[in-house]
Length: 222
Image (cartoon, rainbow, N blue to C red; front, side, top):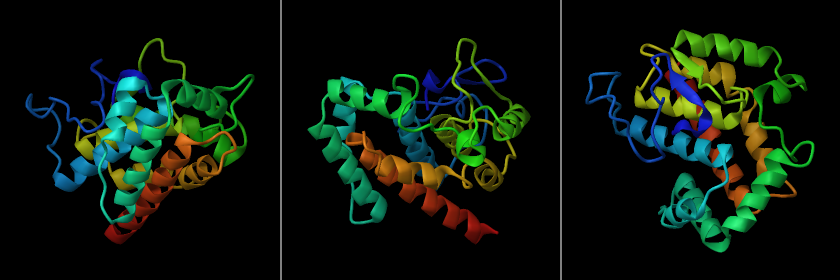
């Protein structure tokens, strides 16, 4: 996670780190160091969050092109993402991002929980989310206008929770079940087949797969 999502903890520090990197909070005695599985989960969520909140620049595309995978479903999705990053350009992916999420008037997709759950923006799901974010000490940074129920921001929150960076004692399964599980898989499926999607088709496939894995894992813990 990074600051692009506009989230800060209650003390004003950036609530996360770039994909694949861990914040220095643990060295300072803040939060709970994650185990290997949670570090991987945090990085996966951070990767999704970063790509959904902004189009990758040239440096980010070079990083993505170096992503390696294996024969697992997630590994194969990573390989497809790397291949897509290699095949596109900054200009193409920026135009694609604009058409998908911004558009003239609106983008092809509206990546917000309120819209997917109620058909309206800034509705009750956003109110409930803000209550839960306040409870774990996370607030929107000044000058950030994107509603907090944006799928990219929710991925950033899950990245921070998995990394133990905030929300001590917060039940990740509860947060996922309340704010992500009811709609995120549908969004990623829509992204995977969106008319404007090319590079982002692989992001949709990875996200859809990962939401399924997380839902199944949390269900097994109950």
